Length: 333
Image 1 (cartoon, one colour):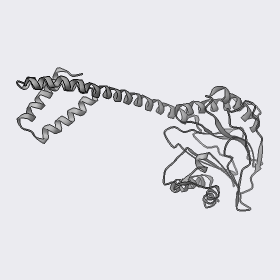
Image 2 (cartoon, rainbow, N blue to C red; image 1 turned 90 degrees about the vertical axis):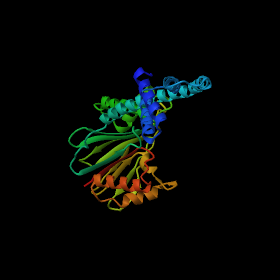
Image 3 (spheres, rainbow, N blue to C red; image 1 turned 45 degrees about the vertical axis):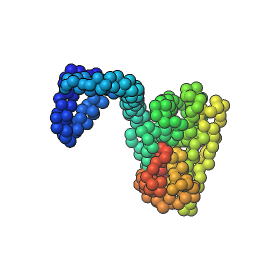
Image 4 (cartoon, helix red, strand yellow; image 1 turned 120 degrees about the vertical axis):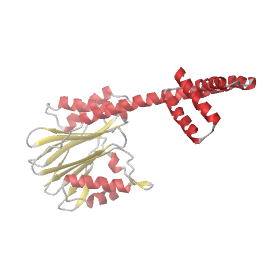
C-alpha cells in the first residue's frame, strides 16, 4: 500500500535525479524497489505513484498524462502476476515450516542411541536425500541378551512419509509386548498398514530378532532388500535369503522366517535401496561392484565400516545422493 510518506520520498528521489542524474540516485531507487517489493506494492500502484509525482514536480503535458492510463492498464497484468508470485511464496514458506515440523517429528521417532550388547558391534549410517526421509529403522531391546531391529523404506517423501513412519513406530511399540515371531509381526503390520495408508503407498521392511547369546538372527522380509552376510572364515559375502509381499499390498500376505548364525568376525549388513542403487557415472553400481566396496572395509569396527562404506559410495556417485541411504552393520566380535 502506497502511503503519503512513501510518495513524498519518491517525489524527493525523482526530483534529485532530474536535477542532476547520478549513480547515487539510481542506487537509492534500487533499494526503494526492494523495499516496495517487501511491502507488496503492486506495479499498477507504483505506476500511479509515479504519475502523481510528476504532477507535483511541474506541469505535465496532456499526452504524457493520458499515456499513464494506458500504462496503468498494462501494469494491471503485471500486478496480477506479482500477486500470484507473492501468494506462491507465502504458500512455499508455509510448506517449508510444515516440513521443518515434520522433520523434527521424524527425528523423534528414530532411536537416539544404538544398543550395546557384549560380543556384538552395531554400526549405523542413515542419511536423507532431501529434507525428509522415507527410510525408517529402529532397535527394540527385549532383555539383556536379545533385541529386535527393523529397517524399512516408505514410498513417498515429506509429510506423508513422516505420518506413515509414526504409524509404523506406534504399531510396532503396541505389538512388542506380544510373543510374536518376525513373520507374525510383519503379518500384523501388513494389516495395519493396509488399513491406514493411501492405496498408492506401500512399505518395504525387514524385521528381525537377534539373540546375542546364540548369535542367531531370525528375520522376515516384506518386499525389502534383505542385505548381505559376510563369512569371515571364507572371506566371502553372500546375499541374505528372504522375500515376501510389501506391507499394505494384500491383507492375506504370508511371510517366511529366515535364520542365520554368526561366527566370530562374521558381519550382517542390512540396508535400504538407497545403498544398492548407488549411481556411478551414468549407470547403477552392480551388486558385485558393491561387494568389492564392502570387501575393502570388512574387518574393522562395525561403525567404522558403515562410515567408510558411506564415504566410498558417496564419492563414487560424485557426492550426489539420489535416494535415502540407510545401512546397519552387525559384527560379531
